[in-house]
Image 1 (cartoon, rainbow, N blue to C red):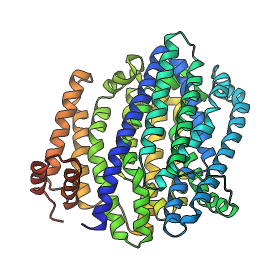
Image 2 (image 1 turned 90 degrees about the vertical axis):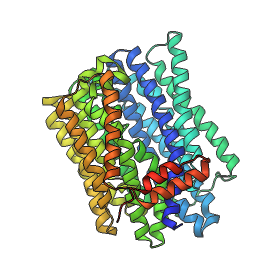
Image 3 (image 1 turned 135 degrees about the vertical axis):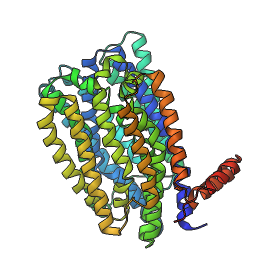
Image 4 (image 1 turned 120 degrees about the horizontal axis):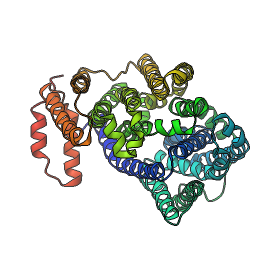
Length: 511
């Protein structure tokens, strides 16, 4: 089996673990959000969203981009400077933890000003309550990054995806059952992050990922900072693209409008679920291909993962895009269904992001993190400008348009730069044959105007996806790597996949 196919199998196996964790995390987070949205009024849910947005931005700054830079550097050091890995890990942790403490102080001090700016009567109290979670969140992210650099995914599953949202849900429900008020939500959040982080520290020590004593290497610190700085700025701009809409809705309107909009936005953010899961192990493998000079292997890895991700994501997109009211009612209840149009707009933007594949991670793998920064800069400028123009006139629909346009802009730039640097792009002949029937089907069902209720939405979505799968088989989009992947899964699980392999083999593309 070729090195490329071996790499695809490693990504797929890792994706299974990461996907399980991501699904669990999203489910638990959605459940917590739904409880908060239903238990408190829409204004308080909007205030919760604004508080978490500020905390997330502060965390992104405190991480200094190390959550992406550290795995790549560990992967490189393990090849030829293994003895320096403890210093690399210790230095990265020291940098980020120091930054997190500064961000705690800054967040608390700015809370009254943010309350006035965002027209929020709660945030000057909720931000100081939530800010102590920052060092624990940063520590968790970096220890997961360290395990990722060693090619492990289990720490991400247990200590980032599952444990924090599960503990938050348990503590939240227990508090609400005994009559806790709105501010308890944030105390529950801090406690869940602290417990998860401390358990991960214990596990990391057991695995030998942490040095026996702190080691601060200024040369390594400078290298890490210079490489990770564009990643930090890119991460900040990611949040500008993803959360400026909520912040500016708070500025122009109030948290009630933010709450309504966030009956739609979290659902749209479900769409990159498979993309993000695939990406967790993608970057170290893609880096190995690039540093080994195997551009053809990198191209095949990028195109194959992009095609898999679109096929897996399509039924979720079909449901959310065609039946937005049903999707919102299912998760957040009928009092948020006025955000249906915003959800349809957002889902189109996030699906475009999915369609373009792991272009951002590919740019990091080929040593071009600044291209991500530039793309996000253009997209963020467009986002802010469009929000200023559209929100006062169109409200949450204007915010949705601004966010979607920003994601399209960023992905077009990243894909163009990746092609310029390596000659790689996602649009092979088979991928076009995968895209066309799916997008055409979504537009056709929407144009027909099927009733938007759950009793209709679920069977139509299932039937539509089956029609789509039949269409891409008939168009012979199956590749040899797909059948080889089933061979690996069969050997790993003991399941009898011969009928499926035999079926797919009949539809393998001729080229």
